[in-house]
Image 1 (cartoon, rainbow, N blue to C red):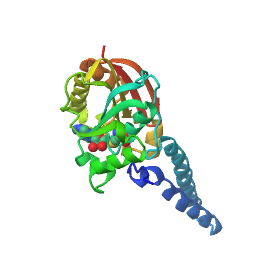
Image 2: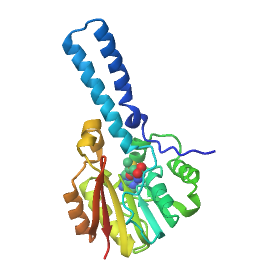
Image 3: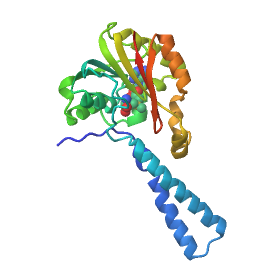
Image 4: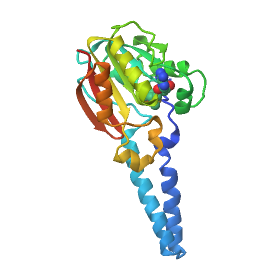
Length: 250
Ligand SMILES: C[S@@+](CC[C@H](N)C(=O)[O-])C[C@H]1O[C@@H](n2cnc3c(N)ncnc32)[C@H](O)[C@@H]1O
């Protein structure tokens, strides 16, 4: 049976264990052989950090199945949804499973940024499709190659939009263009669930600067940019390394 492989690198989930195990080993060996206290303290602190960071990272579960951050997204349960920056399908599958009557267009540029996140292991579109099939939602999904800064879709052609950890990967100007395009293609009364990387305390603790490659910005910046595009912020929230905004088009 086909299985889902979101394809994020192993070290995002398990890298801390590869620090934890050797540092515990070094600590125990050092204690038995009476190494200097400063060296024991170094390995002890390293082991404590790596162990704690591993538990932080488990709650993020980057290769696991995420839950909708808010049940207020697409409460009607049906409609045509656009996923912007769908990648290997994690956010698309999240919506299609939570909203079994909805259909979805999984869009992505499928270019350098895709390879940076998921590696070059065959056709990106095939990898996305294979995950949609494995999740049992492929019959309600189509795949489109699209640059979020200039979407190839008609105005007001979607009931809702989702985007997870993608609009924060195109710089400030790119993000503003993407928000304006999202506003254009969603119907009046429609909504946009915008999920972003947050460089919060747990992200800094576990990954240092590694999650900031997209240039994280705070909630205030995103709400202002969304308002400039025409959206109203109906709800906002946070979870580990994540900020979400539920935006509405009046
Ligand atoms: C961190 S991944 C997120 C994938 C998925 N949404 C998830 O939650 O796992 C960022 C995605 O944004 C896509 N992306 C980057 N720039 C893009 C652009 N200009 N237009 C469309 N997609 C883009 C990348 O190809 C990549 O798949």
